[in-house]
Length: 160
Image (tube, rainbow, N blue to C red; front, side, top):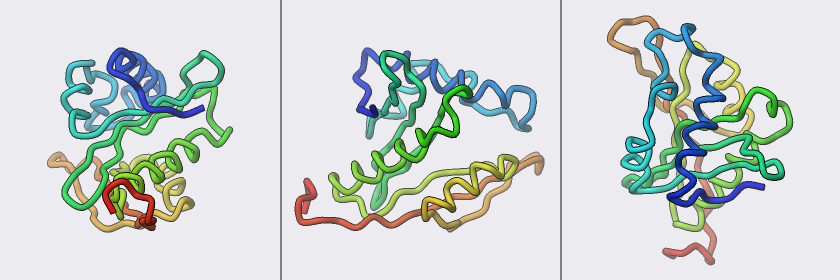
């Protein structure tokens, strides 16, 4: 089950994200901010959006954060814990967020994908996302793509 996280569940969002990103500790340069991001920072970031948690029974197995920006919804920190990967949870999280974007009349979703994690790039390609920008860290040790997917707005959208 995937549902919106309430304010009291932001620590669960944080812990799920950290558990999922732990495999990248000491492997990414620069390091992922997901491993050190504090609850207060998450609350600040999602003030113009929200977060979701994927549950398997009473156990959180995935999470993501989103922000509404001018003309699109930005999705970040999509995370599925190691033991729950390969079960379609990441796909379900993204489909949930795509439906949410439509409900709020956002015709586009954007997200960032590190070049050093090619399996994530391939995952988003398989969901219909395409690269619209390429960036490089100042240290030139890694980079990232901004990927985008258009959503089809329906007459039932909240802001139509």
